[in-house]
Length: 138
Image 1: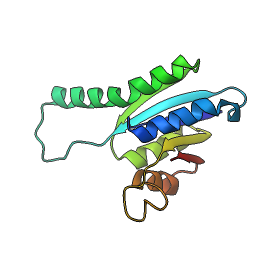
Image 2: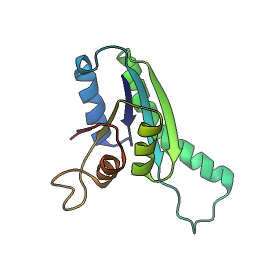
Image 3: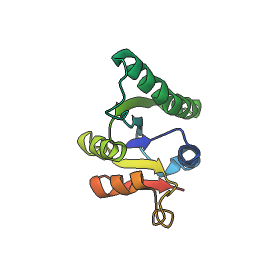
Image 4: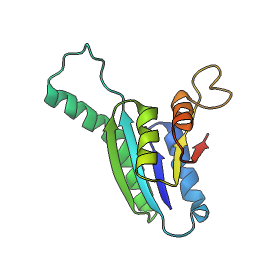
């Protein structure tokens, strides 16, 4: 089973990772876990030297990716890390579909008024855009 774990370094990501660790029996057979973090691009009007922009994206990605990988590897799981820059929900959905993942897992917090009842806007976007099953952990 190929599982895409979408992480952003938030407490909701932590809840999702802890859920995964405590429910590993759900993932019978061979598991392939990929931890993905997507950074939203800097606004177009911001003038930043290319190297500074790349350093910013790398630093922000590491803040989300490194603790997640360390936690999962500490529980004996083999994981790959993946970072991207762009529209968060769109890239999670496209990655899951194009690389034939069996499941997307992500934490959800629901920031909008309607989203508080159901899920966050990124989760809504992934659900609408992807053909891959989505497991949300709140």
